[in-house]
Image (cartoon, rainbow, N blue to C red):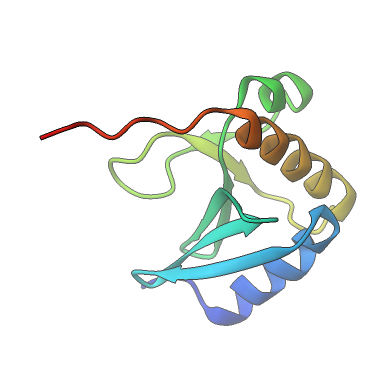
Length: 108
């Protein structure tokens, strides 16, 4: 079915306090970036944010689920209307991801 564009636009608006939010359409769903850092996805009209140890410690009650079959668990954001909490989670997650060295690609 995929994510409805209106939901994606609303989620981006709710995330706007975290920084410069950009959505990238991928296979009917959306990748979500903040200040150039890929931190989450919107799948089936649900927002998912990457899990980091720091965010898990700061937000221990967030549910986790894979955004699609075969994916790793992400935080499943059930309340996207709480802009302050959402912005804090995204800022923390992106600060950690920004400092994490990129993975090396395997040589074939």
